[in-house]
Length: 447
Image 1: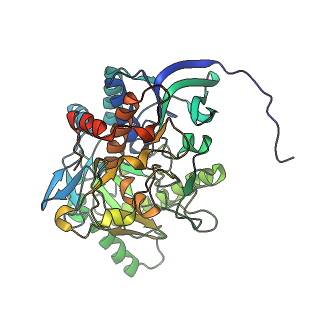
Image 2: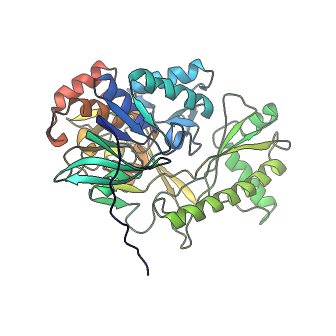
Image 3: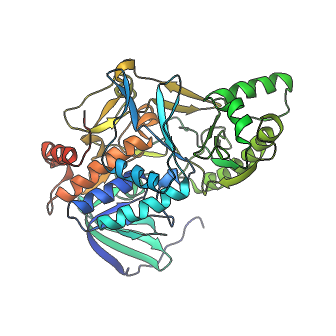
């Protein structure tokens, strides 16, 4: 038999809230803080025992998309809750100075993962958010066009959580999929943005390492030279390797792996078998690249792997169909929208087979685009918003707006709107000018 029938059972109710947020990455953090500060009783449900999403569980170790070129000047364009989180990480000594790359067209802020975790907890607690860790969204209970309750699996067993509205920041659109919202997976051709298992290397001799590979693309020049001098000595998963120092240059973050499935396509992050096989493959690739680092790169001979991310870093799985889908042309054309909720400053970053393709806005002096409210509004469910990498975008649009900067923007807008929603009202009917006014009052930059 390929299936079994689970006996019907009654579920204990964990609690009732105005707003339930699922997922504790940048979108979930911003959503929960914003909802609670605007007076909504708020619960954040997180599968791990800490916050940060791919930034901690996936080992990303830098915020991308906070900075963009406007009027010819590189400046921070994502403000609000993101500012507060960065300030708290900085106060713990865990925030690096801005680092530029790609000829000055991108700027990131790297951080210490432990500092991020410790900074995020009090940010939410002081806002009045209740946290439920080690809980996994398992199902929803619908009544007509509304979600009545979220069903979660916990160490205390399967439970239900009631709420007036729900915000899906799971990254995989889990809640939306359970609720029957239409969605797409990957590029629509059986693949998508390839995942990466991140790792960190410590005990590096900083001076020779910085001299050898301190520039953004320098590691790729070394790889090309070694390939030419020692053909076949090492296996490299992709072109476009990223090796950058953390705040302490004795520790470096490494973004070099690329996870395929048995068919050579991007690993499907919502397929349990592929996800399990991908974890194994990621660590195999890490061991191979680390062998190259120790043998070939100055400063790394006595280094050691100090951390492998708790899970493979997922860039793209489900994307919902909302009232508007952010497109690649919106990124390249620096699009503006009447219902803007904030700015995306990251270019298209397409992790294709064996390489990374970068595509930048045509207007180099104004290389940002606005994000529309409509991309958060799920089709067919009145009291559900979706924020983060699983919001309504095309494959190309998502390759840019999946970055943490845009996720902060979407989350803050979703949480603020959720606190505004009246009983039995629809998110599709929200007063957008009133929402925009609240966002601006809270420090967000919309245009």
